[in-house]
Amino acid sequence: MPTDDVGALREALRAALGTTWQEHAPKTDVQWRPRWPVLAELGLPAFCVPEALDGFGLRVDVAASAAAELGAALHASPFAGLTASAHLLAHCAGNPQAEQVLAGVLAGERVCAFGYLGAGDQVARLVDGAPDADALVLLNRARGEFLLLEDPADWTADSRRHGFDLTRGCADVTPAAGRGHLLRPSPEAARRAVDLYELLLAADAVGGVRRMLDRTITYAGQRRTFGKPIGGYQAVQHRLAEHTVRARGMALLVTEAARLLSAEPTAADAARQARRCVATASLSVSSGAPHLLHDLLQLTGAIGFTWEYGLHYYERRAHQDARLAANPRHAQRSLAEVEGWTDGS
Image (cartoon, rainbow, N blue to C red; front, side, top):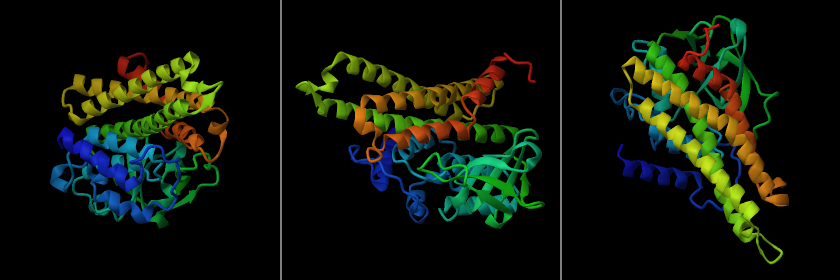
């Protein structure tokens, strides 16, 4: 997909999401499932699926761009998990259950969420999209195994503890005993699926940061005090300039990590470099985005604290993006492992 086509896709996605005009107040949309087929027609589920299976190949750069737009729009779909799941399912050749779920995902008829099983394989905590999903892929990190649950009757979802992020539905998932199918993708596909999940969560947060930073800069040029816009004061100017540089830095890290993942590295050094960039981007965004958004809330003054202004939605979502990937702690450990700073214990 050429660069011009990526830009056209971004504009089409903004039009479908209603975010073409950035000054519109943020709003949540919990009834997103009926409109998901419209976004699926734009190719969202297929960005990281091989072309032989009616996908776009490994276009992580395009997926990251879409994740940023969905984050800016506060979209409730589990796009990061769906993309990671689709990539994994596409690399389970000969598995009829995986093929069936993947076909439904690509057609926009099914939504497959992604999560991590806890110790003892009993519960997967904080699974994004679980309340609306009709298939799940759960990773047991201790065993390196993936479990596919293809029917909502195969699990129970409890969302009572996860109301912090008001823009998405998350739940603790308990698989039914003896249900599901083990997936056996290649080690490279398994590793890449996890990297995709973490990177697209970071891209989601970057999109929210960009949206609120642009809105705060506009507000600073309009809000007047002592006869001049508050953006005319150096204290405000400097903070906004610093936040712009930080936001740009986070976006560049995500872009570079997406570029390296898109290259499908075969050499060990290239794969290590891609993993290093994913961990660095995840660490930068998960540790920096919540603080940046919180300071934007301070810069907007009283209006920033109001429910209607909506900045709190983005701060909550950025925190949740970090929690979903267990970051920044997991990213720190991943980076240390890549660099050989741990003994593997």
